[in-house]
Image (cartoon, rainbow, N blue to C red; front, side, top):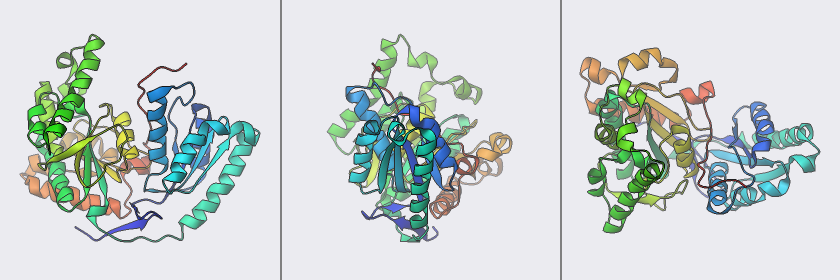
Length: 384
């Protein structure tokens, strides 16, 4: 692998991007957050919906996720904006406590969005000048957290892209780094394969309970997941059963033991491989992975998926030759030579590893180039 180069944050964490972030703590501030982010290079908007009228655990999850995104190691500094300043205070305080430079502004206190835009832009320009003084320095693979995701899966996902990612996952863990996979519902039918790799009985039980939780959510809604999964795009891609889809999905986790189960958007407590409890839809899922501190996300797709995360570069890998041709603008790593030309999975894994190193060192992903990024925080309660 090429020498890895990264930025160093005040708390010692490493970052592979040097972004400014504008976090809308309430959805009424989303438009001005987007305008601010669009006004400067390397500035991203984090604009989830809601933010007002949320209560209890639902509010806590949203706040925790926004703090995780705003204090992400790829972010140099964050401006929190909200309708009224007090509504953004918890997010602001959490980001500051994590060591990331941060300020908060309210639309009401600033006298409207034009005034907030002027004042916010002046602050962001000041931060940008400071950020440009930072330089990358050599980094170790052990210093990085890598997210693992798949979406728009087909038969090639379980044969090529996910196994290739799995080889890289083992390499990351063996080097002392951290890898996080998610989508527990995508593990239905493959529970035994994960349970056998649990670091302890307690971890095994937590894995099983997390997977069953989503099965129960569906059951309460009158849905049998065995009849709705694989999804229509999976079926078009040749997947026939939930077990086939799940076993293919699990391939991206490699073969190392699973150290624990993380809550939605929770950072891993140490190195190794972890399962994160988060829903399967891609935007929600990669939001959770990014909030948990993933420096980048390796995202396998078969029939194609275009979405990425604003703060965590999302790397699209595909083993389907047709998709690599027709969806080329969205594919970062073309692994189709495995099935087309008989390349080995080891060769594919090397491709993934080399691309990952290039992206760590600053090569933009397709999602970054096209601006195909979004944030969606899961809801676990109703607004009042």
